Image 1 (cartoon, helix red, strand yellow):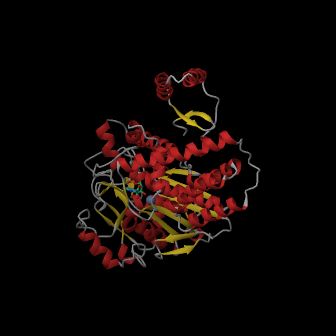
Image 2 (cartoon, protein in one colour):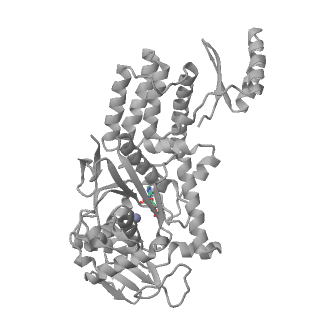
Image 3 (cartoon, helix red, strand yellow):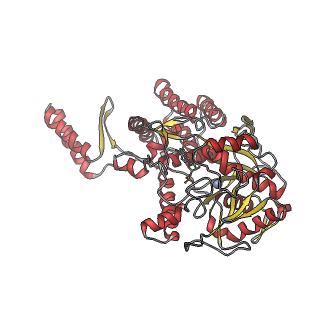
Length: 488
Ligand code: AMP
Ligand code: ZN
């Protein structure tokens, strides 16, 4: 039984999809105006664990992710510049070039972190007509009003507004007013109201703008996600036209916890107003990566990139390992020391896998012993308990200890470790045992001769030469074991 914590109900619930074994999963994609930082990527790793856990439980997952390539403004109050247009000016490129460049960079980082790619990646700019069609329905139903700068959604008309953030309309309005980032523009009726369609400023020619029944402009960030959800998972569009009666509820929607009070709250308001149906059954949110007591954020500038980790000699997967050591609903403080420990932990696990491979050629059809079957159950129990990755990793370490203590079979142990890794995604399947390069073999033979004639200083010099070539040297009772230092 898979249990997941649902932000909407504020409790762990048994997961039940709407259509048998088929699950629709939506994850909010990045705003592509700069590189994703490792904070953003913590959220994508958490969502990857969610998806892998669903797959592990034999669900077929249809994973959809948007790319926010237009409409995300520098202020949550629907004021300020479009983040992508702003970067385009700064970098002297077109807005489309910026979006394309940072989308590719994001996907590359995800690949390095062994994050499984979504089934559908949907850039918002490709669904403008659908956005207009959904806004027209909201307009007909009386949820919208027009101001000088756009078409707005009147949140006071929304039923249960703020339910995701566990606040009612008044409380959410008061909370947002108290927050420094929101100021009430004179024409907005309520502080929580948000733009569905923003008009292009008369003083400036935008690169990304489209005609609409209300005037030239672009869609708001919240409606973009609603439309993409409704199109692919809610089956509510016939070509580009929104058909409210057709809309279906979606199984899971996930993102970072900062999205709860505004972005996701507003997605719910629009969709439920337009369809009269529940938008999403399970809402899952990951907590922040913290750097020096502050949330890592593009706008505050306290960011670290995957590239920065690599430049310091860490593998991106060591960051994945670090992330998995914390539960996704707890804040995680980043430090270089913690990353260093994570790299060490990952190296130890990969050395163990290498050892199993040296001992026995794996064969996928072998049966696991009862001890290992019990460990598999223990692992599944941990991961099915709201994605408890720290506990799942503890089971992995228990397996390693048990292997040595109880002299478990290396083939079977390797097999179970591979099963664990279908969820953890640490890239252990990439570890292969190859014959050592000839240069290393010759050095090893030379060293053995020195050792036999007790020439320890010379032997030690050769060991250093081997190590400098990226291999580790271990003298054991069973002979010298030489293996690549970085296996993944
Ligand atoms: P953005 O590119 O700003 O739209 O954000 C992409 C994703 O990263 C969203 O799901 C955010 O909630 C998430 N996110 C932003 N900052 C952090 C952080 N410091 N830690 C974890 N997730 C974050
Ligand atoms: Zn979104």
